[in-house]
Length: 259
Length: 336
Image (cartoon, rainbow over all chains, first blue to last red; front, side, top):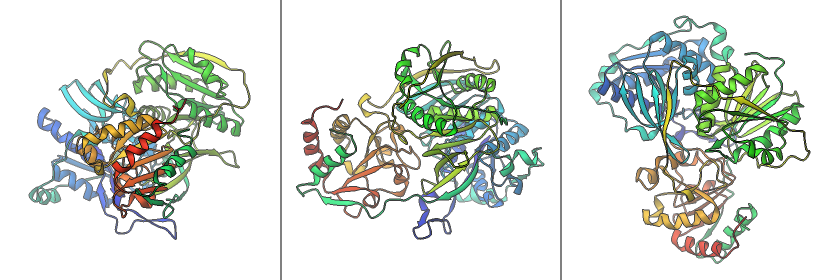
């Protein structure tokens, strides 16, 4: 079971510096890069240990494109949670919706990206695991499935890694170090377009209105603003200039970094 | 969980192998201020064994109460165990706010605890405050730092938030309070599953520091030229007490481990100063350093986009700058 999200290509987002808003038009939607590593790893686990790979996503009908890409990579089944009732979900409501779906579909292993590049919370994976009552290993860079009861994963830490063993079922969140995702062939892309994508609504997963979407959310956004991105205030000197280094030393001192 | 009578601000500190993480004191400083604004008490929760020796240091940052959670294996972070143990004390007398560090472990723990309690969580906040109506307000970046969202949690308590390191400078409390020290037991893993940390390996040299915690981070790009030149950078890092990270190109080339990649597909950091050496400044990298206070860039290409976000830039060969800079710093007395 892999949870994926369609996200705007954050590297393409620009800011309207007059209106202080995000310029989202023309920004392509992509499969969240970290989720792509999760899909790839699920496929590799299937190739080695058997089973099948189901990809689930919550989003508008447009997110079908993302699931089609996962099918083209080789996923067996794709489910899109799409319902106006799901709109405006925060991490809690999102995790709840995904966990209810995963529970309904049945699972051995759940994989997610370590974070989505738009929301950047890194919280949905651990929250789903808690709701499913299973352990999780975050920031995974390598995984070995021992047998159908246990696995060992290398988890990235601030300064290296940890080797962690866990019973299965378990949830893993994927980092970039995990693998290099396959690029679907033209043929598999064509075939994927013909594969069905199942649409689930709040009713299909048995969710009450107040469990999902904005009504189910515990965090509410009061407002959004664009931060000041200090542009055009850079003082630039050439390396040959005599005071290039003294100025840098001055800045270090000013910030209390050196004496 | 809806708790209208939930009261108190809690801070969950962090320790590694029994050593307190600096972010704990920053969180206490923020927590003290939030607690005062809400006219509530501040509690610090630390999971780990034999931590009582930290009391004299922690006390100075003004918690009204410290709860040490200890038991066999408590020094080893296992999110499921930490979360269950903290949930056990939260449910007895729920606080209104719980703050965690936005570190790898802090995010793991806060996520599980939020789901366990069925409450909200604002992740990776860069600012928290209390507004005129007495609401706990969180500000967090999204879309690669392109957008800031102002959040509140009106429906459920406790209200959880993880805070990025460095958003506040740790400061000792101005008034002394009577400190209460309590102990709580570590709760074991649920019987139906098993989890163990088999080994913890440090890949980054001791002097390379911690990207999230360091006040100064040196970022290296392909402009460094070769792996050999990393020695010079490491020397500078020691002198500035800085952590060393790099661009995607540098990590892909194997010059630094994956854990040190800064940017969209790596780490997002908020140091006091980011020193970009030979980094051109692709958007995918810049989103990882946008919340740094100062950005200093040294690059041979005057058109490099890094200069657009830097506060101070030097155009020229890295190796005409670094050796004399290192000599200057070496001649200064060591910082205490």
